[in-house]
Image (cartoon, rainbow, N blue to C red; front, side):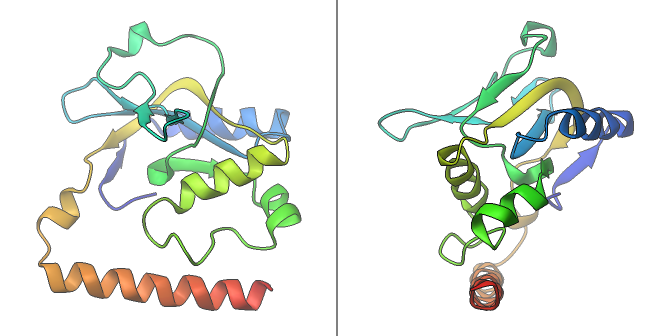
Length: 162
């Protein structure tokens, strides 16, 4: 869970866990994130063939989202549920050391999909994502330090996994 995220619906977390327990072939799962104005921020993302990012149902009222499971290219990690056992069975590590901080969740989701394990979202509002509100208050040198530190830890974790 990101530090710019607030859980609104703790029962939504239970719904995510129940779905994942009943669908062991799902690699990552998301509920719906709201933006600070009460509309859908995202329910995961889709990547087009031109690598354009589309945030699922972004900007819509929750009532306009489908009431069934939908597959997505990636479950954005601000509050995602990962099938850790399945991921480690195929990758031997959760996140690679090349996409530190940004896009590591996309890499994981796409890699798992290549093995036949999709990412999905269910219609349950979980919380509000304030999109980089922490980083907007940080000075550039701290952001650079955080990135390098994250890269170091990711690389170290990757080396241990191999």
